[in-house]
Image (cartoon, rainbow, N blue to C red; front, side, top):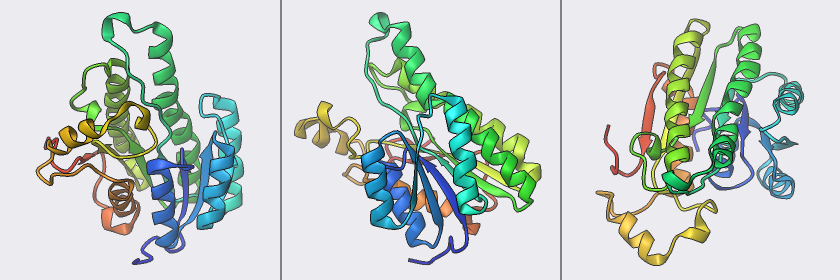
Length: 246
C-alpha cells in the first residue's frame, strides 16, 4: 500500500461490515487513524480490533447521540480530516403497497444522518483550518432506480443532491465532497434475497463480466480521501463495472 493517508484522521459510519469495513481496512492500510461509528457493536468492535481502528457505538437515527459520539470520536483522534458516510439500509417494496413507515425509515437512515454528521464534522474541519474530505455512499440506484426500490433509489438520489450542495458550500474552506455510486456489490446486505442465477444475470450487465466486491469501492474512497483527489468535488462517481456510464 502507498500509505498515502499517513497522518490523516478518518471517521467511517457503518464501518462494522461490508463496504464500510473494507473502507476502514483500506484507510488503515494507507496510514490513517480511523474511528468506526456503527450500531452493530460486536461486529464493530471485532473489526476495530482486527484492523487497528477505534469503535464508537452510535445509532445514526438518533441525532443527539450521533453528535455526541462524533465529538468523542474527533476528540479521540485528535481532530478529523476525512468523513465517510456509509451507514445505510437496503429494502425492497412495490411502489403501490409501500408504507409511509418504510419510506420514512429509509430516509431516516440513508439520508438524514448525513446532514448531522456533515454539520458536526465540517465545523471541526473548518475550525482546524486544514480542509478535509467528505465521501458519501450513494448508489447506482440513485441514477437508475430498479423495481421495488422507490424509497431506496429516492434516498440515494437525494444523497447525490446533498453531496453537490455540500461541495458548493464547503469548497471555500478547502473541503471536498463527493458521492460514490456502487452497483451490484457482493456484501452481507441483500445476501438473503439473491440467488446464483441473480448473480449470473447481474454480472452480465457489466462489460467486465463480474459484480463488484467491497475492495473495489474502498479503493475509490481511498483515492478521494487522499491528496490525489484534491481537485474532485461535487461528483457522483460510478463504481459499477460499466453498468452505469453517466
